[in-house]
Each structure stands twice: as C-alpha cells, then as structure tokens.
Image 1 (cartoon, helix red, strand yellow):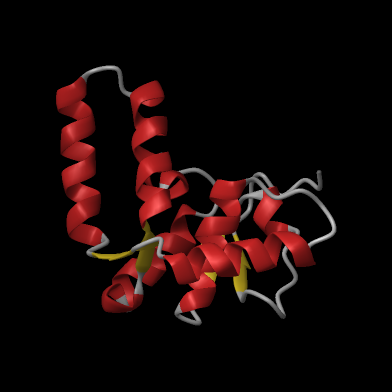
Image 2: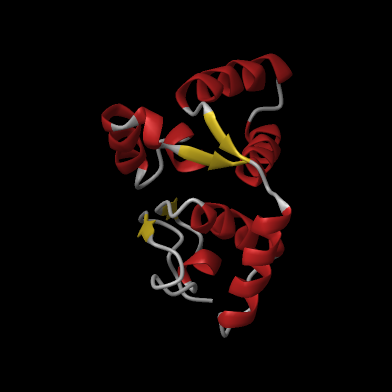
Length: 130
C-alpha cells in the first residue's frame, strides 16, 4: 500500500493488481495499522491522511483479520525461517498464508520466508538481505 501511495518502485504492480482483480486483493489488518502509522510520518495534516485513507478503504475493501489461527501460522513461520522475522511481518505473511493468497511486499524480512511456505511477489526497493 505504501509503495502504491507514494509511487515508489513497484507501485505499478500494485496498480495492475488493483485494476485487474480488485476483488482478489486482500489486506491484513496489521497492514492497515502500519500504513496509518507511516502516513502520520509522511502527512502531518490529519485531513490529508483522512483523504488518503478514504481512497485506500475504497480500493482495498477486503481486510483479513488476525485471528488465533493466523497467530498460530505466524508462530510456525517464525520457527521455520532461519532468520528473525518481526512479529508484524510474520502476522502479515501468515494472514496471506491463511487464505492461500500471494503476499505482495517489499520487506526484506518477509523475503526471508521461503516461497514454499508463502507465495510471494517481491516489489523492487527494499530487497536487500538482512
């Protein structure tokens, strides 16, 4: 969402997904939290943030909750990946895994998760290994 919002490398991929299959795009509830926190840093004026959030609420209508099942999948991912993955990243990846979705990201932490565990599209940008 952030890459799309700020038109950073890879935003075209997100744009294409939203245009081609808008009903197939899901967002983890954790992603909404992280997006809002970054918007506070990028847009100090609350009315601007509200406008941006309203746009993305219309674009990405399918939010996936973090449930006990998702927490269990996140725990499993953290144990199966040889490097440390922050809880938020593990929960987002587990949310995708819970519905057999493709995780679209540019987070090097999530990139450490083998694609046999979570299918992924890695956007250009923050791909450097940790």
